[in-house]
Image: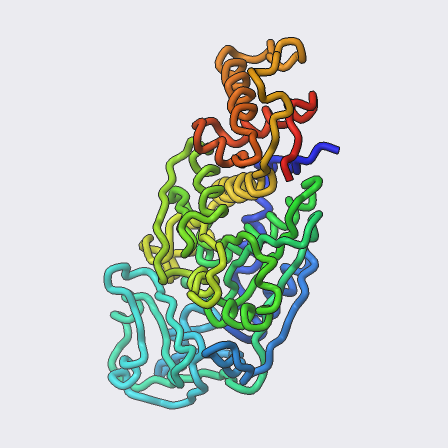
Length: 437
Ligand code: ZN
């Protein structure tokens, strides 16, 4: 049996399906707990068989505690004529997430202390949260703020903050072994497209795509949980199994036009870091590598010093680095199918490298083996194709002494991982190569 795993290229047409899922999830009012989050995971379960976990309010998770569950039925600000001048039902970004219940009539001046807008982008509604402070507020465009007349307004926030639970979902796709690759996306943002619905859609289609793989070496665990508290809770609930995690990636902001950016794990040069860099280099497209910092998404928790897992982050424009970030500008027009599928390609390439980063032994290491006699010199294809394949055969044979992995050979030779993989397959076929271990 050939030892290498196979994972086909994703179909370029998948971009439309990824986008359709983003579109479907977009209207839901998600937060770090509550029914919008549950409904999101229920929809995802139609695509992949998620195991849904409910962790009760008050559960300790390292230095954190699962908060009260938040749900909202309605919220608005009404003028004296009874018109809703700010309406949660029209856009869920209008309400500060985790706002406590309020029903008051107040003068505009008093309400203003609870209003948020973005003068630098006057048409956009900002996204704000009040998770761990008992507060309330509304977000609106600067233009809408300017148009509010002095006077009194009715403020209603029909929300509930009560004992409940935090919901997360996970899906384990078993491979040949128990060693795991984890893929994490946060699930707590309301109507925002790139951050974070693009990450959810990417993981859903990656999970489905991996089922087309053959002889997968790793088991793949997909985790969909709220940011920060969700990954902290997941880690604390699963601490006995963390030794099985060999590699991981945090996915979000993968649907915008920006180029791909890989943020290294805390370890800096873990196999996942090298695999991601190799895949990006091989893509021939523009990319950027960011050093680790304890800021960003849930890689902060996976890379906290007491956990220190080899988990990097692969995004397009990073958090905070594009103007639409955390505003109503991050909408269904900002996310595009072609960028979603381009990101899916790179994720697939990274996983293919991890799957096939094996150590081999050259079975005829004294002098070069005669390749022509074994039909290994390809005669078809362009001149460059033929030459590169020959070079790849020679590099794999030369460094396959049981001490160099295929990724080592890629880094040293400058050849693409796919090229070296094809050479290794040919050499395995004619028994000039065997798996070292
Ligand atoms: Zn965010």
